[in-house]
Image (spheres, helix red, strand yellow):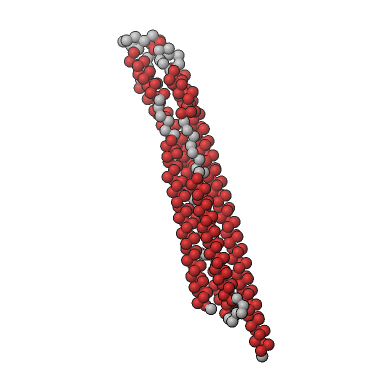
Length: 291
């Protein structure tokens, strides 16, 4: 009988050890799979942001080229009129590349901070899960008086440590949710350059309000016929030469949106981290109550 009891005890202990070993392997595999998922999401986010930056850079290049061509049309339009001073306008065309600043990239320190904070939350959840596995595993350290009970409770509550909602995949969702938003920022910034070019074109067309007389009158102005138009044209062409290039509004639109995304991801990852920790604590409470 004593041998039988020892044999039963050994079987129970072996069952407990097996259940706990399986638990550790299952949780570790789930953690590694989820971490790979997070890394993939971060790579996708990087690719999305880089693509958005490229679209904005292309739009900026097209904008500067189109704006220079637009100014050139006005220079060409009046270059044969010797009475109109085009020197300032000519200088503006030459200096356009230095007068304007290219857009700042979306991929800046704020996105790097996103990745840092996400990885921090992932690490916190991983540490919490590993600690929970250790707690369950150590509950039947030899000599173990209730191995069968431990095995039963481990089998019942252990799987919850690797199934939703206790999963790092929820942090992955925090990242992937922002893919479309970063893409939209790029699209919106690129479209702003089109709007700026339209605005500049409309502004430059105001020169048409000047009552432009025939070329021979412009080239031989007289107080009676030529002076008012020449004064109008000279004044206007000088003023458009100093027209502020409002390309900075594109950057000013970007900042609040990218920072909002940063805060949203940070908040989401932190809340998921805290929620998982709370749920793990509840699982451990249930496990202890089961023993």
